[in-house]
Image (cartoon, rainbow, N blue to C red):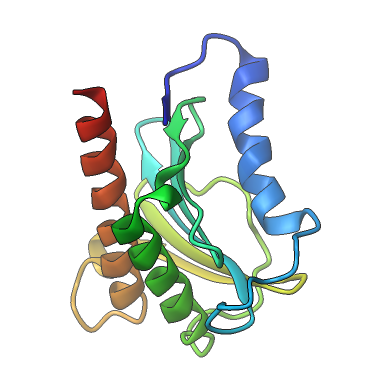
Length: 163
């Protein structure tokens, strides 16, 4: 389900709140079929004057939040999106060697990419310029690629749902 651009700053704060809840709010227990200990992974990308966040939960819940107040929720009902989303989380969890405990989980500067993974109450993450992350061999490249797979499915499913 897509939700559009909001008009007032309270609505902008709403999507920021949803994103922060993913990283800080109490979470339900991991599903029985969870692949590991990670509960949520995020791919943050600068977008225009703000940020876009692809969010993947252990239960397959998949969303896109825009700091401008728009986004897409409910993609985890699609089996392909759910599987790609869970693959992103599994890869993030397996990448703790390049994702140290995160100090900053707020908005990122223009041109940056950040990957975050929440394991229990601890958030791990790393960021780098988008131009570097897109290069094969960069420590965050595989995470970027898998996050982009999730984002692509969100876009394709959203477009199909509009038809």
